[in-house]
Structures are given as C-alpha cells and as structure tokens.
Image (cartoon, rainbow, N blue to C red):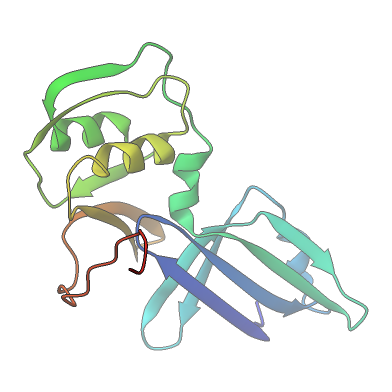
Length: 172
C-alpha cells in the first residue's frame, strides 16, 4: 500500500499513538477496517511499528487518515477477572498473570507486592502494579518475523537519573 505519511509516538508506561495517511486511489484501502492491526514497514529496516486501527476517516483530498494506539493498546481492550488479587507476590509473577494475547514479559523485578485488580483493564492493572515498585517502568517492543508479530513487554528501570527532584508545596 502506498503511504503518504506516517507517524508514531511511543510512550513509557502507556500505549503510544500512531497515524498514517494513504491515497484512496490505492485498491488495498478497501481492506482497511477498524479493530485490525496496522503494520508499518520501513524500507530496508523492516517493521517500524504496529498498532490498532481505531479511527478511519476519508478526507476531501482523496486520502484515508488512519490512527489508533500502538499494539500495547490491545491490553486496554481486555479486563482482569473480578476477584483477581495477589498477596506478597513477585511483580514478575503478577505481570505474567496479567499478560494475554501473545504478550510476554522481558526484564525481571522480583520485589513482592500486594494488589487487587479485578474488573480493571489489563494495561491499567499492569501500570497499577508497577507503580508500587519505585523506578520500575514498562515499554513495548513488537518485532516481526515471517509475518508473525512478537509482542514483548519490557519491564525495568530505563534511562538514567537526571538528579532533578520535583516536590510540591509552598515556595517559601
């Protein structure tokens, strides 16, 4: 499919956002539907990103504008069973229990936490769990091989500390 423009923003501790523009004259635009997965490839490099098609709009300029969350957004579409709770359980075990749909965890945080996430979106439950362990974050890494997407949720401390400390209170 001919791509006129594409843009993706990845986020730490959240699904990112993507958008693309394709000409309506391309016959493959008939296959574009919401709830499908969009895969954007970069020539010579392979998969640039994958995301869920959430919005499809025709423009007066004979273009189709597509957008949605990056593939991590899949976990926001699924909920945790009511009554799901962990007591003094390693964060690794909790994250593994919350992942679904082919997502796997990489990175290891063995700190034990306690949490009840019943009825929450799986992505929200993951974020509530990692908030209990200072300095722990998640980010998505999606790769493609032989037309198969591998969904990996990386967990750990990413980047280096800037040394800046933010606090609230009176400036006095």
